[in-house]
Length: 326
Image (tube, rainbow, N blue to C red; front, side, top):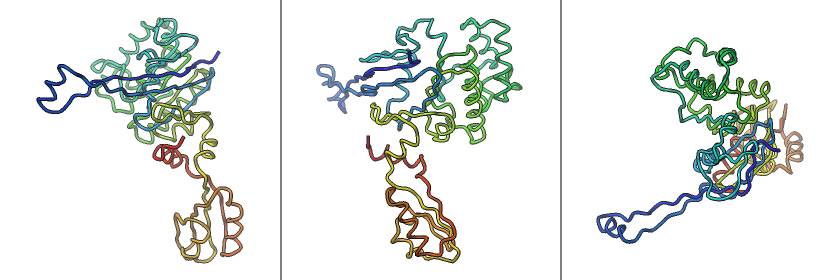
């Protein structure tokens, strides 16, 4: 049985469109125009136990709405969802004790209390034995290098320190399924790296299932085995990052180094010049023609070295979102 599974999962919001002005307000007392917004449309997911899957999409694509339905915060308009065999919107304690949700822009810690007090309350709520709680908290705090901040008021912690505490709060009860919604949002590159290293180590040791959303592709590249891409509420791709590049990018990059200076005008006949100086250049060429173009460049120009690279995954994803291809 998969850890997470959905079938044609949908969430539609209805709102009333208000006409402008006083007359519009009066008219709205008698007739109201309803507006429907499909936030999630026919999403099919299957995440096996122990997987770490990236859930990608632009702002407003439906990622957070999907996670809220999978954790039981929202009821779907239609469709089915199962998490560890349970319907999440039933909110059964047997399921809630086995899952966790971390949202980068929301807090589950009490703002005016030390983080340790929040951890102690959560341990009681999840019925974590006291000795297990102490041992697990010590391990998590050491791994995240936050042990010296346990008794500091949460409001006095930095953003990175608060995010680390949020992760501890989410993992104290050793959940089997973890939903991470932008866990590195707004953090500096050092804090992002540390949290990625921690998540990778924790996932390897615990074997938990993770569904991760992030706008930082480095998070996904370092952590996830495969990705699901959602746009306008629907899944447009599912597979590995390599497969994503092959499907949505038909070009490659030739990175060239020359033994003698070469003019940019001499390179244009081989492909689109992305970067050029006296001793090196980067060309964008059609994927299928890459070997022939590389050979032609080396035969025609004073080439010293050539390397062939895929288009950067950030650019592939950006192109996918802006073009609306699926």
